[in-house]
Image (cartoon, rainbow, N blue to C red; front, side):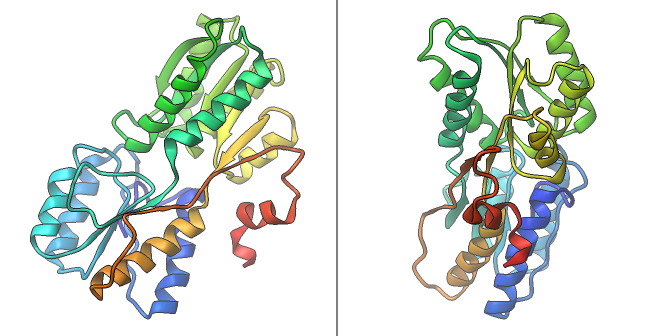
Length: 286
């Protein structure tokens, strides 16, 4: 399993789900990822190492939709099935995709932000890595929904390279250049932490509404403090578990689903304590 980076709450939970499935299906799971999400060459190198090591299957969460395509095709050439997880890759040789419908997730975030900022809102977007398929799809879904409201204006779109400090710097820049901004969406875990912390530091929490993605401890703290108004959560535990399940089926030559949607949910103060949502927020209690 080659993921975008080897740390962070989201990827720890993916790994947890994958390890449960690996134990259940009696497979040897190697979990790998570069230190930074924008280290595309590092991901390609890990793919090459897995091909040379004659892996029985590879699960890939591609940091770049186009740049990981060639090495994915190379794995298929050597008869190694590739399962795409969380983020897609531009290869027709992928056996299955397991993850979120990112376009719908972007629309969900936009719907809530318009509800919070009104139909004349001024909104910023903090994306993560340009060229990442899930980031691009979330942004596209968000923008398409916003386009329904002619008086809502997106004042800035920034890319933080999945770096909290860059997200803080870019958030500060957005607020300085667009003091009228009253809403911001951050499209992954790292972007969410950096963006929301800077909104808090600037003392404009509550005035500038924040929609986050994912549920690291810091985002949940800021949700309870009123800095973050809601967060779109995925199901990283199921991503890991079902990706391993699909990989095992591919190894054994069984039919597998072309797409497995692990769904998203909007979490806010009103529903975060619901039992079914607690299972999503804290999968380690399973």
